[in-house]
Length: 292
Image (cartoon, rainbow, N blue to C red; front, side, top):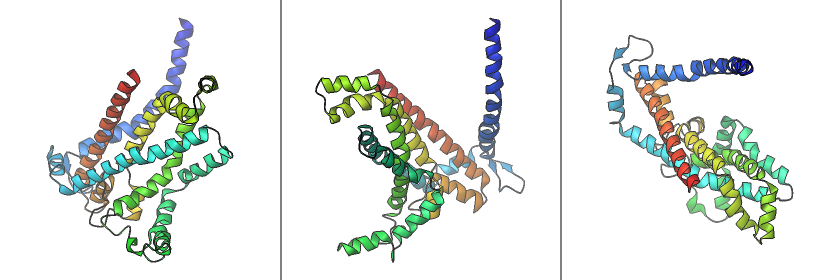
C-alpha cells in the first residue's frame, strides 16, 4: 500500500506540471475565445455583450458556408486521395523493396520542409508564364489546358490541395509503414505457407492489423484539413473571389483585416466543435468496424 502511494505521488509529480501547462496553453484560451465570441469587440475599444448574435450572424453568412464547404472538400480529398496513396506506398515499402530506407527518407523529406518554402515552390510551378506545369503541358501539345492555376476559380482550390497532398503523403506513409512493420513476421510466414501472395497478405493481414493506425491517420487528415491555413494563405489568400477560402483563413481575415474579434472568435469555436464532432464520428465508425 505504501509503495503504491509512493508510485501515485511520483505519477502526480510528473503529470501535474504537464496538465497545468496544457490548461494554460489550450483549455484557458478556448474558454476565452468562447467568451469573446459573445462580444462585439474590435480588440481595443469597450466591448459590447451580444449573447449568441455572432453565431446567428455566422450561420447567415454565405461566405462562411462557402469556406466551410471548401474545408470539407479538402478533408474529403485528404481521406480519399492522400491516405490511399500513402497506404499504397507504405505497403510497397513494407513488403521489402531494394533501397527501402532510401525511399522512406525521400518520401518523408517534404514533411520537414517549411510550409512557406513549399508554398513558394509551388507558386513557381503554377506560374502562368514560366511555371513548370504550363511549360510541360505546352511541350506535350496540351496548350489548351494551360491556365492561371491559382487565379482561376475552377482550379484554385485543387491547386492548393496538391501541395498539401505532396507535403503530407510521407507523414502518413511513415505511420502506416511503422504499423505494418510492427506486425509479427510469424503471421506472414504462416500466410506464405498457406499460399497467400503479396496482394492477399496486404489486403487480408496487414490492413486489418493496422486499423487503429488508419483511424489515427484519418483523424489527423480531417483535422489538418479543417484547420489548414498557412499554405492557402500564401498561395491564394482565399481567392480568387473566395474560391479557395477556408474557415481558418476567414477567421484570420476577420481578426486582422476587419477587427471583428468577437465574430472571429465565434468562427474559432465553430472550428473546435467541428474538429471534435468529426473526431468522435470517426472513432464511432472505426469502433463499429473493429467490433465486426
